Each structure stands twice: as C-alpha cells, then as structure tokens.
Image (cartoon, rainbow, N blue to C red; front, side):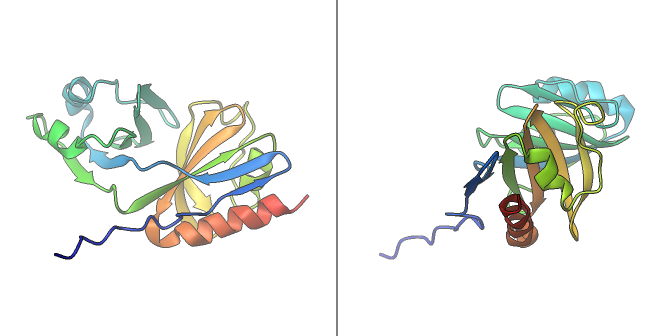
Length: 180
C-alpha cells in the first residue's frame, strides 16, 4: 500500500546565521483569520482563552496562542500547538467569521542585534523599540510582499507571509543579512 505524500514545508532546510542575525522558518502553527464586530469580541476572547486586542499594533498571548490586531474588526490568531482554531470559534454564537489560513501562511523568525536593520532593508516601517515595542504587530510590506510583522522580543521578530511568497521573503531577508 502506498504511503500518503508528506507536505514539504516551503522553507524546509532554509536558515541563515551571520554576524548579529539569524533567520529561521517558524515552527508549524495553526492560523486563523478572524473578523468580528466589537460586540462579539468578549465571547470570542473567552472561547480563545485570551483577550482579543482592541488597539492598533497590539497583541495578546496566552501560552502558545496569540492574537494580533490587524484592524478594528480583524485579528490573526496563531497557535503553535496546532489547535483546531475554527472549531474553537464554532462554539461562539456571536457574529464572526473564522477562516483557517494555516496552510496559506508561513512564518519566518528574524532575530539578533541586526534584526531591525535587516527588516528595514525591505520594510518602510519605523521598527525602533520606541515606535514598534515588544508585542507590536502590524500588516505591512517587505519588498513587494504583504506581510504581518510581529515584534516578539527586543531583538526578535516573526514575519508572517503567504506561502507563495515565502521563498521571495526569505531570500530578500537573507540578502539583507549578508550585507554588513
């Protein structure tokens, strides 16, 4: 009997480590595109086990689960345990839209003292700690690709991009990282 084909992660085997910078594919995660009016936020927050952020550039996390504010009624919810996020939201009767985008997105971890500079080679946003503090997240661009950028530490970021752009985004970051 033939074995089922294994889906190959788009950045499998890719990594870069240089002076003051490291680039790695993020571990697999469940991802949910969540849209809901303000009136539904409390019920969804309770079901997800975290308070959905209500302010621009803010995030909330509880263990391996995080919610990133993308707009007044929009969040990217991630879960690194692989939880079935659409099923979690299906228990909520309040108005919302929850779409599983786990296979659409890919995460890239960018870390080290040069992380801001490497990202700013293709991202026009001010990434200084004063303007983009730890926990900040926003939808922006990197080169010609739309990304969601999340500052996870003083010198650490997570870049979320569409799977089809992951090689381009990783290559752009790697080229910037190779420059001194």
